[in-house]
Image 1 (cartoon, rainbow, N blue to C red):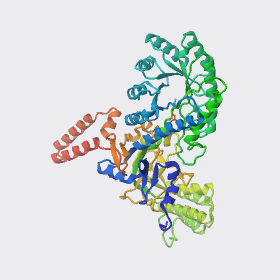
Image 2 (cartoon, rainbow, N blue to C red; image 1 turned 135 degrees about the vertical axis):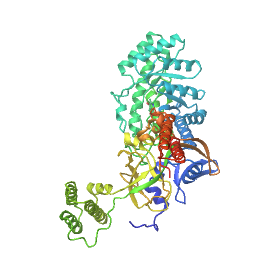
Image 3 (tube, rainbow, N blue to C red; image 1 turned 90 degrees about the vertical axis):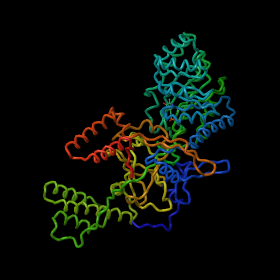
Image 4 (cartoon, rainbow, N blue to C red; image 1 turned 30 degrees about the vertical axis):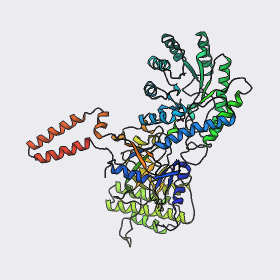
Length: 632
Ligand SMILES: *Cc1c(COP(=O)(O)O)cnc(C)c1O
């Protein structure tokens, strides 16, 4: 392919990778063609090149891959969420307040939770916990005055810990998801002499579209049916605890792409809220759960990778819907709680990795002239190739398969098979080139095009760092960190280091379209070529697994400063091979000891010298304490 640099601009590149669309002003490209992270400084916007950060981290001894967290982006999201709700509340003359909580399950990492509590402190941004482990960390991090919302199945230990949180003065809400839980809560709160704040989680029958359709509706595994809710009210009335019922909770699902669905869900929730007030509950809080979507594709559309609304639209829809539904009922506007996880943390983290190698699917030059005495099948393939002038390549596939069969039958040599494969590739390329010239496109042609795409090998593990791209086909924006001043001339999918054919990224947003291949720059081994997977701060870190024993990557957290530089705030070394082996119950010292004995035996039998023994043991030890990813 020809390299055409003359009419390629940095803007073209930014558009191609959709950076202004999904980047939301947080990411850009500078005049050197490098991706930047951008923040609003007090004296105007500040930009820092991601390549500059990569270089700084490498100088400090960190190899790729690295999860990079930008503290400012997390802060900016929390401020934006709270301020936008405040704005919508003020504009509508709404009487309640916004009380945000962060659902811990979306990213439990210590540094993230600490930062959320710190940046959220001016807004009393609270935490939501769905298990005992999450409650333990939430309780020990909670900002004074921040709500503590408890979801999930609760046993006695869970409930007791929550009741003690209440005694300590934290506004702790027990969200009841099942009738059995309520009995236990009533019993334990009598024992500990606490009047708990109680919430009722209801199943909303409004079914939402998007990737989590199952979480909503009648068959959702969470929440009370209307029958169970009524029973809960009666139980609380009988126990003279109806005054403890203060919150209605619902969670429509995650990543809800359509604002209309959210509006209908809120309306239904309000009806329940009104009825609970009429049953004598004081209420006061309406918790609408998560669901605020991230525009991963940047397309602002109602599909599962995007959303058809802005944060302003979201806040305004919630505030005005509640107000409109409650007005004329004589019931005061509740405080609005949301549990936005994804939208809070997705932007702040990205996975940075380098490219190690490329596999091309390109024909080598064919022998000229084509040997007349070649095997008949190869002659046929060659004839088809030379006479082809359309785009019907069906016959080429038949000939290739026949050629492969003859190889299996022992009639063709390795050299002949290679020539046959090459003839097929040459034919496929000719088909694609002809179709491109005539502006023709069909599903078959694009399939063929995808099959001819390069495979770029990246230094990362999908299963460890981007598990949702594998498990639920999550789309994440991916782009090179540099060379945006050059036209990308290759089409590629990205393969990771695992020996698993699912270890790949093959879904991209390119020029606003969903595609199976990503344009990348030509690469030759030994070169430095860096790529980023963005918006990966939500759910990925603790869902990741040890497939092929690739462990946690290094994590670096930086703060962009006013001077246009960055401060390294925190560095967390990734798992060493020894650490990973201990997760699967090996003892690194036992392994080392075994090798030492074996090496000593080899010395005794004169297969190794003592110096060689030491060389080998040093190598073995270095591997045990080393990074499992590829090191150049
Ligand atoms: C997962 C979850 C959330 C977070 O949802 P996002 O879509 O990430 O904002 C909030 N509340 C509950 C109850 C959840 O289970």
